[in-house]
Length: 225
Image (cartoon, rainbow, N blue to C red; front, side):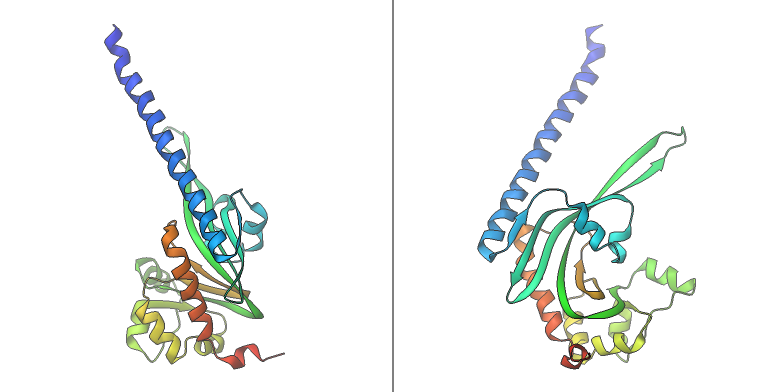
């Protein structure tokens, strides 16, 4: 009779073990974030930040699901630019065949850079199956002279001129060298958005990539009144 409880005991032990592993990994990530913030001269806040999540909710990737919040947030001046780097959480729900509701937690990282003027929405994402499906339903992207760029990236904006101004030859060359990037620009914010949580070691290099993208935007875009 006692052997009947062995599977339950094993399950409980596994839950405890995975809980400890998760707690330890999260603690190490927070400590690494804090050390990076100190080295770069940025502020750090590990707490759940619903205000920032609401502030940036106009970004498409941040408008998904519910219970949205940022955490492990770095912000401040980096190489004379106002930046933010953070982990992000949202949740979705599904129901199985028996009517039981299940919550799914999603995590990824984002970086933002404040811009001195506002822009219409411009998204530059990797071309993939979902963007091709969207095109089939009439959500066309913007074509460019560079066939390779049009093949690798899906660019969408209600303002084609702004999209062409931003995706100039120098920008296209850089993005083709960095095909993993997904970028959104809207209002006075530029954002790099990732599919998962960035390794801490990659945050600084991605801040530099974001600043490089900013440097390739023509000066005349920032001289308008």
